[in-house]
Length: 485
Length: 68
Image (cartoon, rainbow over all chains, first blue to last red; front, side, top):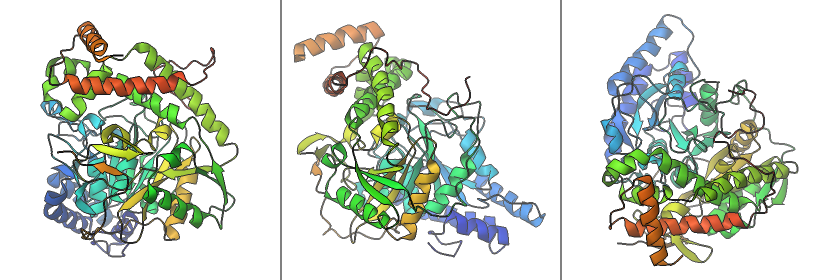
């Protein structure tokens, strides 16, 4: 992190403090951000729309408010961008698809975009994603692949691919994404940034294009745990536009000290270790070692994980296919081939499988709640491996070659399936690609998860590094099985 | 399920829900149905009690205070 608010690596807290103090104008911050997007985005392919006129209009309003002596919000002048399933007034909400480009432009912003603006943040534009969010790779037949800023030959991860890549590349200090089965955590892991997937129901999904209503979550990405907490605080609050959104009072986190003394940390073994490669296991070990002087470290098993993940797979497949049924009937040829066949299969599943999946999900939640009687936090890798090469179709897991697309997020799926809050923190081993570690808390305890993330960042174990050219000598991740033509 | 049985299932159910499965899409649909069947078999091994029911389409965690 840097104290220069015009640096690509300036955090939200630094920018907002400088704007509030008058050391820099919001217009200067926004202009620098737009220039960087123009220069760097062609190499990364993170943005699908840049809202430059709106950006400058919002920035001028911040500067005018300051000149008038009005109070400025906690994110005053901070540039941000949103996955293109968020409604942005004036743009069709494409959700990564070609079909949705025929929709009329959104007439209003999504609730969370409005809340970012209300806190003083300035919208830069919309970010690319896997089609209809059914993706862990960042590859999209309509928009092209979103590339990993740490190595453009590798995947960014998805489906919040543009969010992870833009924040990692220094062209969006804060970004918004969605997570149904791991779509915030997978790109955060592969791109080396922080993400927060809050408790199911915590943040409003009003004004966003759904994937799987039973499982959809929204949340922020940032380059520091402090910025993540600032954004999360700005996003909280009840909203009648989302039937699942809680009306619990907001629980601010940004001012909390990173005090973790006394927390009981469970390191997940069993299925989570069996499906993690050496880089993932090393990252979890590094996090546990950093936490051990201040906390109690315990081995933990969540034996329901594999079944809960299977339940998430079936609920996702069936519910999303039902949601898209009319589009599948009449416009299937316009889908991305990598999502179309899976959606079609989902429309054919026996109802008994899906009903059982809902029951198993409920059963799995109670297994997890029992586990949280003996620990406060669970940790596990976010992905089995660092970023695979672009175009990879297979993933080697536990000695088997499996299709990559449905499996890259398997370590993330059990927690979104049962709605637990998870902060993903980036771990960079020396000279290697990043990989994320999930900090999982009990329902509604985002505060504990964020405290652990802030502690790990302060300890130097979980820090977002600026991308630098990667040497070809860096080997492919050990988990990677093959790149098919 | 054999390949022939799987194709018969695809033909029957896609007709019921009004979907057309082009021949070039069929191998992918078969493959993903196979993955789904594997997931379903994992679920079969879970020892659910008869009173362990959660079929509502809106999922709530404990602590949600409203009831819209």
